[in-house]
Amino acid sequence: MADFKLHCFAQSGNAYKVAMMLDLCGADWEPVFVDYFGGATRGTEFREGISELGEVPVLEHDGQRLSQSGVILDYLAGQLGRFGAETEAERREIWRWILFDNHKFTSYFATHRWLRHLAEPKGHPEVIAFLAARARGALATAEKRLSARPFIVGDRPTIADISMAGYMFYPVEETGFDLDREFPAVAAWADRLSELPGWRAPYEAMPNGLVPA
Ligand SMILES: N[C@@H](CCC(=O)N[C@@H](CS)C(=O)NCC(=O)O)C(=O)O
Image (cartoon, rainbow, N blue to C red; front, side, top):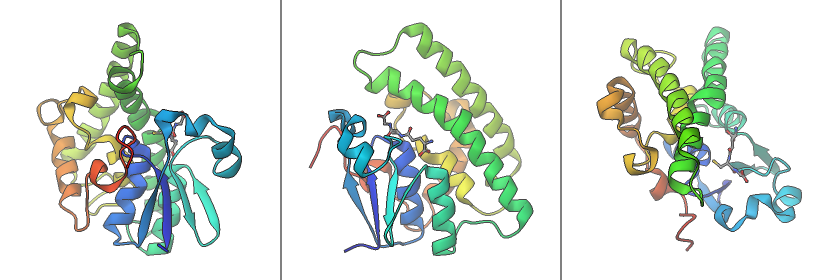
């Protein structure tokens, strides 16, 4: 049995943050497919048996069950000794960006992708336009930051990068954002992350929720 079990599906960039961390750390892990599109996260079995929050990712390790990608990344950085903070100031800086990611960067980008590409029926055009504008604003913040340094906190990748990159590797047909054209520093940063040893793309790392095995 693998050391780590990750409840996930490939369309979830939030789950991908954890899959990416496990891959980059060379951890022994296996995915547990969650049939999100079949309603699993809204069902009693998941909410009472896996997570009351009704969301992936959920990580099982050592008799524990953890949820919220930021908390899981922090836990894994401690367990696996990679991509964590080296000083207290760096720890605060990492959390500043993980919170920004959860509130503005991932959340608008992911909800925009969801409503334009995955939801049935698709979202109202005005709602999609609102979310695109909010996502573009958060991307502009990251673009400025990454124009001046290779990674979010400085010279080396940390869990802040892994958190923020959760949705950066889905195709433009899904996201509606051509990062190379609109946000070249963000695109170059995502390329740098994808060159790290062990990296796999979301659809390679996790089971596809629309084509269950
Ligand atoms: N802040 C959470 C967000 C998790 C989240 O939004 N997960 C989505 C998939 S990407 C989910 O499982 N949603 C279930 C639902 O809405 O029923 C995290 O970072 O873990």
